[in-house]
Every structure is written in structure tokens, then in C-alpha cells.
Length: 237
Length: 237
DNA sequence: GAGTGGTCTAGACCACAAG
DNA sequence: TTGTGGTCTAGACCACTCA
Image (cartoon, each protein chain N blue to C red):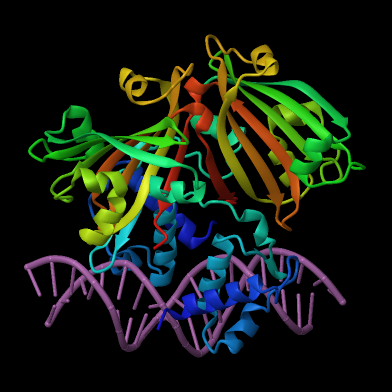
């Protein structure tokens, strides 16, 4: 059994997605929902706050909770979305190839990116991602080996994040990301089906554990025509 | 007098920034804080949740609230950054040219994007942004005229957002954004110094007022080599 | 076992919107 | 005036961490 407020949140999301509430309509009031779900108002409010955070509704004092048009953004990619989560939403025909996997000493740039000393070993992982028969994403990961031990090709083929969280028991907490467009490298051309494209979209991520230590640096290199990023921004008065 | 939980939040932020709590240290427990601030635990929790959201602390069940190194995240916040805010951070030599400004009936696509009827008039604004002598951004704005009246070339040259919020008293609340890469159009080639580039990075924004009405649709078209987007993402378990 | 944060309850008063 | 969401309270029980 889940949390009550999560159950209510999921129920309301399902109803909105099914079209039982249309964009512009008002949800039942918190008092009504409280009766419907036989719970307290604060619990309803917790569920509604989740809907707000994820862009499903907008609350207006004195009026109610307005349903937003969420359909325009079917691929919510904000957050720490890993390729595995992304591919589950995608639902297409997907395959990962581990092109490289080895340990090395960090060069000067990598020491800086990872904020570590040179006596630490670093995993180098290069993976290409094939979607519907085309290799369109190249993921280059660098992980501190003192945190992540025992990485294998089999793990890299499935999900490194899952391995880190479930096998190693480390908790990934937050990430800084930068998105830019760059010229494709020889490596991009080698491992991706770039067709006529000469540039790639690069997402650089710095990933932190829950104790705020930086343990991973990643470059996710996308063929530009298949790249999409979605963001939901709230005004911070 | 502010909200209680906001007052507590601001107080704790100040203490962390002054170094009264160092990264890695544990904040006083929620029970202790409750006594200190003479309030209820839920109110303390609201303040602490704000600290979590803004990257100041990380909570661990059974242990407490760990203070994070916030100085690592002193980069421009994503959010609703307008060109004006962006240019103030940039600090370069900047100039805006209003290429077009007129009222029209919304075509079919625009009616869909703005979710409005065809009997409403829509402002069409096209502005090019010159930074250090190169025109690298083309902003195409579409605003519902029933909300925004009296737009002039002078306003468009400075800041439409400022005009909307300060002159018209409307409150901009949130925006949904989509970022993709597309082929440059004839219009892009006409108004931008694209040099050898054949593609542009397109940021599509749907901007809402605080009563959740969609009143603006914008395409911000960037020359790819000068584009950058920064994001801070928290794990949503 | 003691202390921590996570969830939940059943109230209360307030500010704001609309008829 | 009525109904809405925003804030706040004083409890309660639970899951988890650590000694």
C-alpha cells in the first residue's frame, strides 16, 4: 500500500489524462476531495501540491484548482531522467551498445570536472543508444571508482543508475546540467548514425550523491533532429 | 509581517550563508526547531521543505537535515528568464531591433497554440537580438490583445514583461518550455547572422498569468553556437 | 530504546473571488 | 455572504538510524 497522498495524486493524474477533467476546468474543491477520499484536507493538499509541481494544475485562491493542458508536453524529461526512464516513456524499439568500458587515471580536465585527485581511478564508459534502428544518442560517462566498484558490461547495458542505487545502495540526489550545441567529433561520427548532421546537442551533467559528493560526470550527445528537452518553470515572485 | 514558515526559512538561509552551519553538519531536529521558533512541527517542516527545494539541505530519515555546499550552485537559475534578465547577467554589448510589430487575426496554428478563438486579435512581434555585434537570437512573440493593450515599438525595444507586470498590473505566473533543434527558416536567415549555420535552437514557451490563462506564445530562435541552457534537477525518488 | 524525519488527522482562522 | 485555497496548530503513529 502506497502513501495516501501519492495514491490520491496518481488517481487524479489518471483522471486528468483520461480527459475526465479538461484544460480550463476546475477540480473539485479541497473540501469535496477530502470527503471523496475520506481523508484530511492537509493530505489532499499534499496530493494537489504534487499536481502543481508537475504542471497538471494551477491553484488560484478564492477560485480553485485549474486543470492545465498537459498534453502539449508528452515527454516530461525534466529532472534526473536517465536513458532507461526515457526509453520506457518512449516505448519504441530500443537498444544499448557498450562501445567502451575501462578504468583509467583521470586527466587534468576530468580531475576538474569530478573535483578529485589524480590518485583516484575513474570508470570510462561509452554507450550508443539505438532507437527504432538508428543510433542517435552517445552517452559518455565518467564515474569515480572509489564510490562505484564492480561495474561490468552487463550492468552498463541495462542501467548504471539502477546498479548504483539498488546494488551499491548509494543514493543519487541531484544534478547540475548544461545544454549546448557543438560540432560532432570523430567519435560521434563513428558511433552514431548522424546522416547529414554535422552538429550534436550535448547535455553535460554533474551528478551528486545525497551527501553532496560529486561522483559522476556525463556527456549525453544527441543527434539534433531527435533531441527534445521540456521544462516547466514557475515564477518565483 | 511575512508568513511564519517563510520567516523561519529566511532565518535558516541566513544562518547557513553566514557559515553558522557548515556543509555536512546536521541542523537542529524538527522538534528542537519547533521549540526554538515557538511553532508547530508542520510549520517547521514547511520551512525545511523550502530549504530542500532550493538546494540548501538534504533530509535523511532517522538522521536529520544535512547542510549542503550551496556555493556550488551559484549559477543562473533556469526559470522564466527573459532576455532582459539574461542580458543583464551577460554584461556584453547588447541591442534589440524590433523587426515587426502588428495586430492580426490568429491563424489556425496560433489559435491552437494560444487556445483562443479567431475573433480575438493577436500581437505579432519579431525582434532580433544583437550581442557583441552579431544578431544571434530571433524572438517571435504572439500575445493576446484582449489581455495586453497598447503595445508600442518603444515597449518592445525595452522589455515586454516589465510593461505587462508594471504598467498593466498583470501577474506572470508560470511557463512551459520546449527546446528543440530545427532547420533555419528564410526568416531566420534574413534577420540573423547565421554564418555557416543551417540549424537553430528553438525554445517554445507557453506563458500563463496567475489565473492560469494562457496569454502568450513565444519562439526564441538561437544560433546554435551561442546557445546555452542550465538546469538544476532534484531526484524525485 | 531513544531520537530522527514521514505521514496523517481534525480542527481553526485568514485572504481572496464571485454572486 | 458563501465558498475557495493558504496558513497554522497540537496532537498521533510509523519507519528508519544509531548507539
